[in-house]
Image 1 (cartoon, helix red, strand yellow):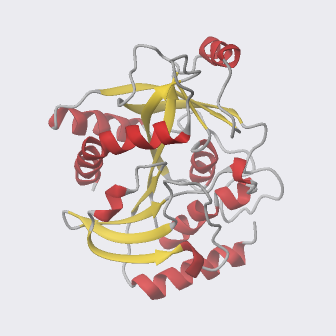
Image 2: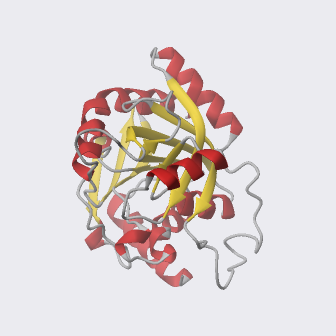
Amino acid sequence: MNPSHVLEASQILNEKIGQKASIGIILGSGLGTFADHLENKKVIPYSEIPHFPTSSVSGHKGQFVFGTVNRVPVYVLQGRVHYYEGHSLEEVTFAVRVLKQLGTKTLIVTNAAGSINRSYKPGDLMLIKDHINLLGTNPLRGKNWEEWGPRFPDLSQAYDENLRKKAKAAAKKIKITLREGVYVAVSGPSYETPAEVKMLKALGADAVGMSTVPEVIVANHQGMKVCGISCLTNYAAHTGAHKLGHEEVLRTTQKVSEKFGLFLKTFVITIS
């Protein structure tokens, strides 16, 4: 990744927005409606930002949004790009580099995921306490830019403990159940086989998805505090009468969008 490209993109965003935020949020599949309810919004399509990759997946609008939540300023990525789309992990994590350049200190990453832990049901929200990277590669592979972070970053606290405590407090305040577990990232785009899900369960995973981990690694590399939230949209290796598809994922996120939005709003206010 070229640092000059990150600088160029951040300069354009600074010019277009003209305001700063210390909190950044990445919205996963079907979860982009949260950004629609921000106040004092400024919306910049990814296509208008130099070097910014664009998503080809439904449920990802592809917009960089600035706005406020109860007067708290936030940057929101309304949609992300994925490794399975053919993007490099440098492209997948480009937005996180830009957020850091803009002054973001706290990153909230969200995703839609399949539930491996059968006591966690579709429609539940899961706080990520740790992850397993099964993408087969790492976004920090290659040249390390010392101005961004160390060659060998520590991921023993990849998901900030203090932010997790505040997330639980926010959920309790609005009386919703917030599960907690380990998220595993696979490359996709095919869903997992029953044998693969059995393996992932044996490894200690509670939910599986095709995103998030690269962004979390890069955020930690840059010294950002991270909180991760999964919206559990289905049981992994679905065995029902119909086949699992992306439409089911989007239907579930649509059903829980109000609960998700209320939780995210409460959490942002709590950590501001």
